[in-house]
Amino acid sequence: MNLRCVECEAMFPPRLIYQCPACGGILETVGQDDVAPFSFGEGGTPLLRASRIEAELPGFSGEIWLKDETRNPSGSFKDRLIAAALGRAIAMGVRGVVCASSGNAGASTAAYAARAGVPAIIVVPAHTPPGKVTQIAAHGAILLLVEGHYSRSYDLARALAGEHGFANLTTTFINPYAVAGVTAVGHEIFAQLGGQAPSHVLIPTGSGPLVKGVWQGLREAGASARLVAVQAEGCAPIVRAFEAGAEHVTAWGMPQTIASGISDPLIGYERDGSYTLRLVRESGGCAVAVSDDALREAMQTLARREGIYAEPTAASPIAALRQLLADGRLPADARIVCLITGHGFKDARAYQEMPTRTHRVDDPRDTAAVARLCEAAIAERV
Ligand SMILES: *Cc1c(COP(=O)(O)O)cnc(C)c1O
Ligand SMILES: [Zn+2]
Image (cartoon, rainbow, N blue to C red):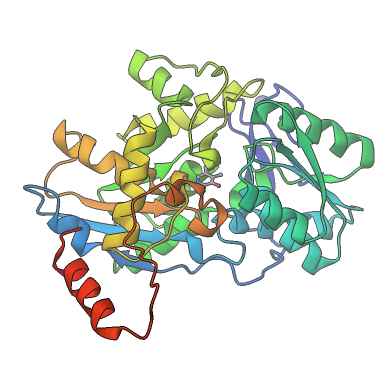
């Protein structure tokens, strides 16, 4: 296995380097990896048919499938990247690991490092959802909270990796071994559809390693699909460049969205966004932004129609469905895979504001009254 620059195509032997020494470009791995991931049960997640969602889309005659990445050990697909990158870091004999995160990569690193007995420093924005912060802290990681947007945490993690000689497991395109770990998603989708490709894959997108993983995994399987990068309206640098027909993505200001997992303004590593945009275009796909209101509605749809409890980011493909079907970017007979990337347990706040069918029972001995209340509730349409 070797490293190759995606810009100038220079090749390098595998080392702990984070950008092309020749041109500063993004590095990728090529060839068979001879280092095993530090596995903990990640991957092999179910692909579930969403027939109730299909039935509620007017005029839709295709298929919708949910790749349920909430089932990974720490509750998000980030486990696939961290398993690969940590396996490599341990093989290279590092003293510890550092990871900048909007929450999920940090939770994953904290859990995997705990199991490996490796010191971990996790850097997150101070406003990271409490569920994710609690999860990271529970695993005993050194947790650093940094005011401001995610890119400031990114910069600090990069500096700390240098200071301590730790491996940087940040899950942008900075660690090529991590990104290689996510190609399995593409392979799994292809195999789970019986050796056929979907027509479209809808992907919650921050900097884009997941887009790259699906793109490359399908390609390695001899297949392809149109890839749709889904972002939040309050942080949509890739969508903005796509709509402008631009080649280069420019950084976003301060993100403003409930979708913490894709709140990445890309400040200082805009080239990650440009690379992702290139892959999206090459696939014949597109990039689309969804509002926080659409995210809330999609969360309810997933939870109430399909039994899947997802964090706001992870519901974004469902939020994008209606919009893309309405404007014809998704044909009515499309075979669509939606990546459900992170668990609802991580960020329950958005659900707590939603209407529920909860009732306080004052007198549990009056079963007839409680039964009447339940009958009335069953008769309601929700
Ligand atoms: C990190 C993350 C994403 C975005 O992944 P990228 O590979 O950075 O584009 C999507 N969903 C969730 C839940 C995440 O944690
Ligand atoms: Zn280069």
